[in-house]
Amino acid sequence: MKTIFKTLPLLIILSSLGPIHDTFGQFIGRIEIKGFTKASDIRLLYDYSETEGLIEIGDAYSKARGVTVFSAMNDLNNRARKKLMEEASVRGASHVLITSKIPDDAGMFGRLFSYQAVFYRHPDLKIDHEKLKSKISEHSLRSMKSLVTNRNRFGAQNKFSTGTVKLTLDSDLEFFEKDSRIFGRTRVLKSIGTVFEVKTFEVIGMSEDSLLLSIELKENKQYAAYWFDFVKR
Image (tube, rainbow, N blue to C red; front, side):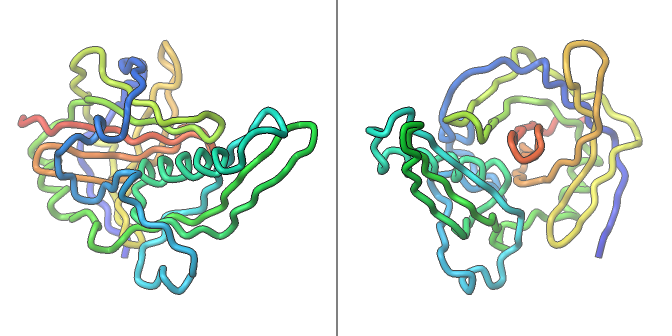
């Protein structure tokens, strides 16, 4: 059943984040955040029957290309799988069902290794909707850092805030629950200036002090997990 509650809007200031290349380990550290699974902890599945009881998130695709015919297929396989696991983590998955795994000798144009998959989340990682409502009603959110993946690039990229940004709020933001997942909508700054677009995000992690949101930045290409700290009003 779809439930909606209104709270104060979240304005994600993407331009306030500066790039720093880093690892998943540094992004999450040793902090326990319910719902979030690091790329290294995601479980690979190869049989659809293993997905019974899991929450489906969506489809995914990953590829790695070698520039010559001498590129090692094993290295390409590892790169493609690593990209897939990073995207899965950023989108809130705990399990990945591999539906296609294709090595392709592309002749004079080099070699290619690709994966097609479906992302899932274990129901034990479901975010408590009522607890989230309570936290939001008593706190504002401060952006801290993000982790961005791009299917056309290799390696997830950490971005840390260059300054403390306390997010502005109004009554337009809605969180809603659908298919055991919690979503919301907010305005996101597209570029320097005053151009915004409305984005749907998913809540993929929450602790007593922090909240993780997942947003598709570019359709079927670029995804980001945003870390926010709760700030008592």
